[in-house]
Image 1 (cartoon, protein in one colour):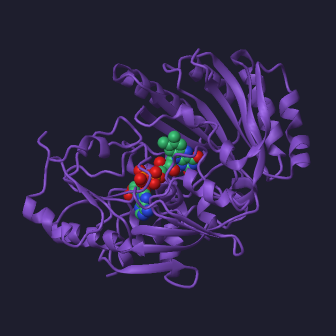
Image 2: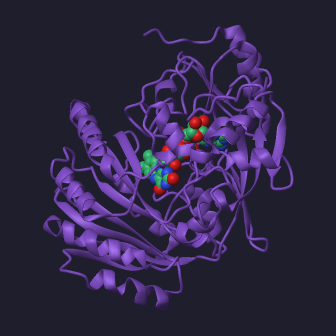
Image 3: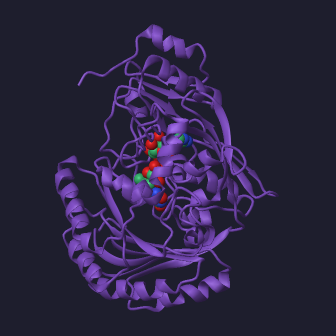
Length: 460
Ligand SMILES: Cc1cc2nc3c(=O)[nH]c(=O)nc-3n(C[C@H](O)[C@H](O)[C@H](O)COP(=O)(O)OP(=O)(O)OC[C@H]3O[C@@H](n4cnc5c(N)ncnc54)[C@H](O)[C@@H]3O)c2cc1C
């Protein structure tokens, strides 16, 4: 397919009033800069507009609408669906906007829209503070927070979006507003779970928590123990304290051997003595082949799984909330994992518990507040020749979970090919209100390269 590029005089129109970097197909760094985390994505924008600040973002949005160009917004570029790029359009790229400013007295962090969680962790930790970020540190703050944001600290602190206290947003008409509980409260509600539908968030203000150290790590067992391990996991996590988040995992050994393993991956955000006491049953269960658990700074905990998800690897993911972890689901997980075609493949159970579940389902746009488990199939591989086998296995495994599914699905994990029902499952009961707010703030659906909410029709 021919690569669309902007005529020089059009590009100059933007360049004249833009402080950042512009890169088009004619520029040498184009192929490097248009890549995102998921190597499956190969979109070719007409222009990448890397912004240095809010004024650049507003200018980029206005230029794109004036020129009739599709807009994609890039935060960390991590979405599996490749939603940070537009084919033939303009990318409002926030990757130069990664500043984090912590006010330790107020326990607040102002975070620019293109920051990664590693940026936030580093700055917050310097003051002994932290907030829920992704399970790995390379995820972008932007898309992750707007999609809800689950992670290691969610039992203690809630979702990332539950900790958002203000956002600066460039709207579809280029206007710059601050959204909070006091100002543009409807927009603020929609930003907390409604994805990138409502504007470009140039900065987020998060409440921080006094968490410097956690007890965390991995306890791995031979795959033959998988059924018993997941049954123990079910009983154990049903009574775990808010501070203890444990993923039940079927994984492959991180040492390159590809050995399949059953594991607890855990993080306890409480006091060290309490943490050590509460994680002890996980260390004592069965006969582990590897136990790597101990006290560590939270930013280190947040990097433990990073190597398993390298930038540029090929990804195809599916996930669903499940109605408990019953024996038949465990059998299905164990059976499916036995035919996993990639040594980078896994099945993970992520528990929703504690602070996440004490938020009213309509208080933010994230409706998933029942104590439950999210089952994630994050399939990763590196050789394009293996793509068909990995996509087919992920789909078959997801299909096999059908009898066990609860109603909801986690927006942030969607791949490119999700059907309309998937959006209904993600936005749930909050879908109609999100559509009303979309009509108010973006009636022409300028921001549609996202898990798109169509503006509600005008009342007749
Ligand atoms: C390895 C890996 C691990 C992950 N772990 C977790 C996890 O633990 N928990 C979880 O909840 N999710 C997780 N995710 C999913 C992740 O949250 C989403 O992919 C999320 O979209 C990433 O945000 P981003 O800014 O990097 O994405 P991008 O690809 O840059 O953007 C995704 C969407 O958000 C929009 N967007 C991004 N930034 C902004 C902004 N500042 N203003 C407006 N719109 C914006 C984009 O336009 C696009 O529609 C993981 C993904 C990967 C690949």
